[in-house]
Length: 330
Image 1: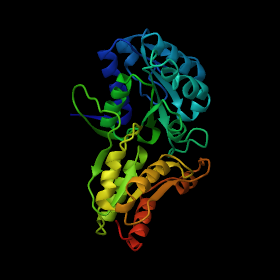
Image 2: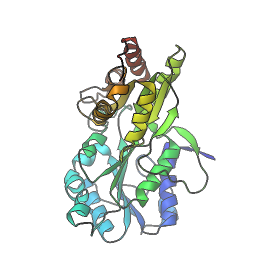
Image 3: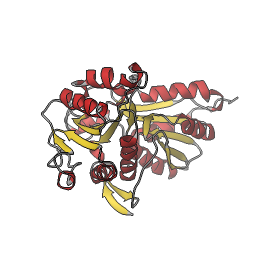
Image 4: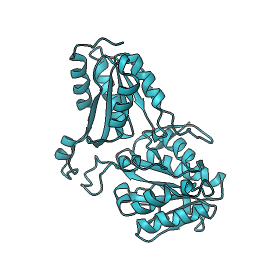
């Protein structure tokens, strides 16, 4: 196995799929030199300018070109530099790309990927730090992937590129420098399968992307106090591995859902609703959510930390949950 950083894993996945399928092309702002976050480094030199396209600074043009390329038989991978800028091209993504296959009765599919960095934690401020996967969650027709580890970054991005539907891949900017082992050779992780990162018996911590690390830290701290916490990495929101969430919570009887997004609505609320509807009798305590603050993210590090998810906040939530008298299940 090779040890790669998260950003190197992005480039590795792109190279793997470009070598496998000559229809895979890349487009985005400044991606030929490697991109602002160096996630496309070396790809121009290996695959040439006919498959690595630098674009104008126009998210609408990038999304529209990707849509047209997919309709013409290519498998484009478009980069939106910061996921906040989906707001600029949302008509193309949510109104056109997400609905074309349905509106043509399946005659036209759009095998395209739109990828870019997401989330906070680095002091980029309110307009460059949003976690926006919830925007896409409200739009039928889009698949949503958000890896937490380099190996999953390779495997999930590869699966997204091979998928015949549009997939949005959210790469967390605070994870770009993290390292992890990646399998040698071709690596693909099927969409819609959660990963159990840590086994536990007292509570299930449901996480995605950056919050997986926070949950693992929290689980280690809780273990030192005799609490066994299971950590579940969703990996993708659409398709969602609801069966894995339900199976885990039915074992532990308790769930703490940990999401970077602001607390109003969101994917955590959707999972809480699923648990209430399908696992109510197995729950021995209410479902708890730990979320980001309902405020624009500040630039100042102490203020950003105050409104962001952390391992300490997860530990506090679990401790309070375990202090509650258990309800009688069944």
